[in-house]
Length: 120
Image (cartoon, rainbow, N blue to C red; front, side, top):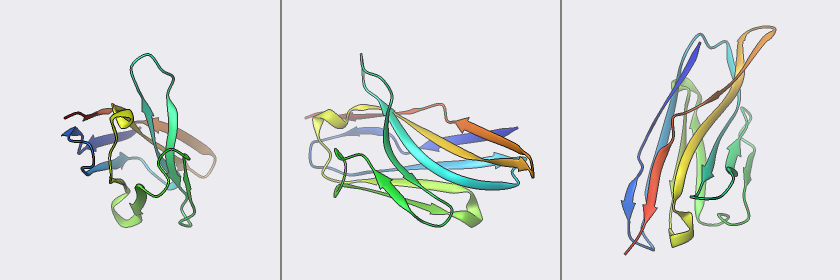
């Protein structure tokens, strides 16, 4: 099994910054895509950013230029640096990792979620 442990959420003022981390552990053969999603109250979960094993990044339009996703393959960890935070960034942020635990056995794991609150 694969476990994800997230950290870094909290309360921040508008314009502030936070850095989220998500470490994957367990029976991991390889990791392909790592990403972050978020779910605001009363809304559906949405993509924030993803990064492939080759380093290709994809961002939601709403966070482009403000958020940066990165990964440390040696540590099976993905990060989300969030700058210039806005009220509308308030949400529970979920880490997602896709990979395989053997050559023909894939996984799609989710973290437990970490709350980010942007408030003055």
